[in-house]
Length: 125
Image (cartoon, rainbow, N blue to C red; front, side, top):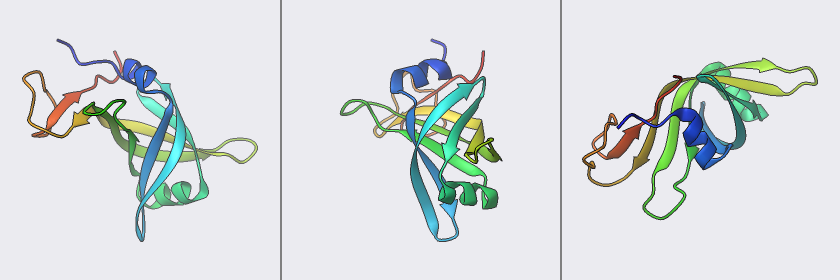
């Protein structure tokens, strides 16, 4: 069975996600609305997240499971920022790893990179 496509995963989980960045004092989580452009995700940033990605561009996007015992959607990538006319700061996140993940033993159809129940998500065609 082929890995699910990223656009299908985002369509299923919705465009609202949590963006995790790293500051000098530790992790920072913010709520964002994402847009998918091929294999790049964009989202408007708050000032803390924008400052964080200038220092450390490694980020994660997280969607919690939709039901008890379900899979979380986790996308990891590298971000850079631009400023739109009008002043909004936008992250452009190039994805490096995308998975559905849930704790527990690895299922027979698991093809993810970890020992838990993890399924890869296909980026692009």
